Image 1 (tube, helix red, strand yellow):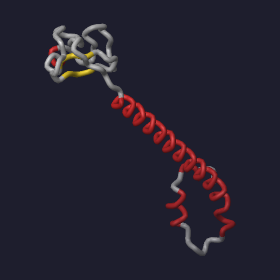
Image 2 (cartoon, rainbow, N blue to C red):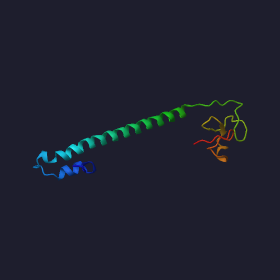
Image 3 (cartoon, rainbow, N blue to C red):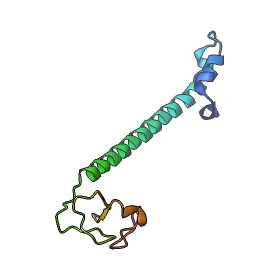
Image 4 (spheres, rainbow, N blue to C red):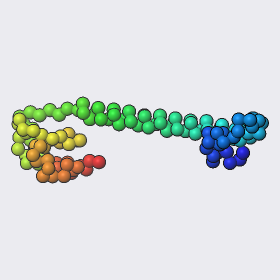
Length: 119
């Protein structure tokens, strides 16, 4: 009975003949059931924490996608310093703007203006 926690309770119970009196397996069951309930609670807690983390990541993603940047006739590229105008552009996480064509010429994980490193 003292090793009940280390055993697969379902497998052990399937091996016990149906004619076995319940009294003979009572010690085993009294050790097994609280341990099983604890495992279920731990797994439920882990699953719920994982769901919360997933929701937080989704919220952060929505926040990032809902951010906007205003481009006007005076907005210039952080790399080549030319006006963005109607060209395709990229926006760094801190809001810096570059021409899309200028982006691959520099490390996209480092802001070309401030030198800020993004993770």
